[in-house]
Image (cartoon, rainbow over all chains, first blue to last red; front, side):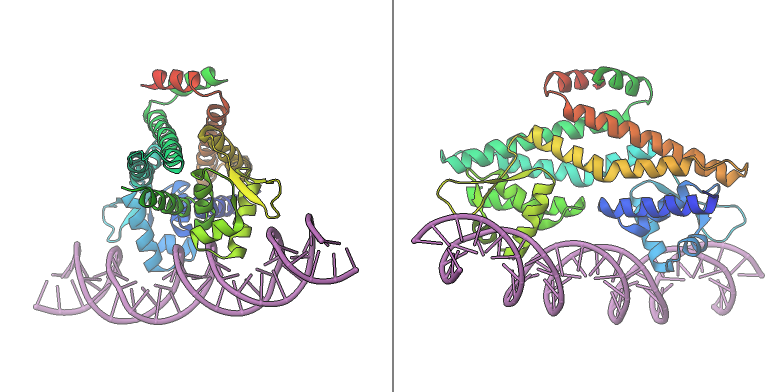
Length: 167
Length: 167
DNA sequence: TTAAACTTTCAATAATTATTGAAAGTTTAT
DNA sequence: ATAAACTTTCAATAATTATTGAAAGTTTAA
């Protein structure tokens, strides 16, 4: 496999993985293009490489910046803006995990808590609703906490310890 | 909050969380309905409760069965089929994690491996592609392994140990 | 058998989500 | 100030994905 083929494969795979996880294709592709680029890219270059429109590029770059994984780079002497993504996978994972937790997991945990806190009227169905949503709440909270802790830790010693422990 | 309100809130929250993670609404809602039901439900009952068509119900029940989290229940003396979902959250999480790993993560890991194994032609861009996809590969593999181990373990001692370790 | 009770399939349609492109907006150099 | 270089916005449109409903298929009881 040659460079170009490998590059295309990586970008399109990452793009379709994105859609599978609720992230749109263009956004995932822009990020992956930046991820393997050796230098910051301009909007023109991104549009050109991925064959997407200016508007699409602009909107998705904005979203990536909102997620904290892409930043504007100002290149001296250049009028236009250039973009880079976080290059350290560990840091990248941290950002994504943190944001998804904040935007998606935490609000759901809140609702599970509310639902599981309704007053028990003694009926079987109410008891079941309370029991099951409470179980889900506890699971979600534990999983969220674990994920955040793991991802926030300095890599290596922790991962190694964990892997040793659970093997 | 009364029972009915709490129930509706739970089902619709779970449904929209689903869409956010690439699982369709009806599928997530059927599962959550079964999850808090005190007894197996027939197709009629599911259609009625969620106001969705017979075809939709049938197709999504099938998918849930493919995922291994819903099973047919045969009730003696009843002609029609009844359905239940795995009621134990731990077990539910195990199934989902396992299936997502198998269907989505593993194939991507494979591609990352292929891409990161192209021959190094000495150019900077090839070196970068190899380096970055290798890092992603390693991260994905570690995360996948950890998730599977964690989720496969008997609960409690492991979770407690982990939480203690990473706190 | 056969017909009633039930489930599945799938083409048509609806709903949702992504993308475009051009107009409006902003910044910078002169 | 102004115009060129660039970015953002957003209504229109395209692409994708979910849903319906009725016909075809299957199972069971008599």
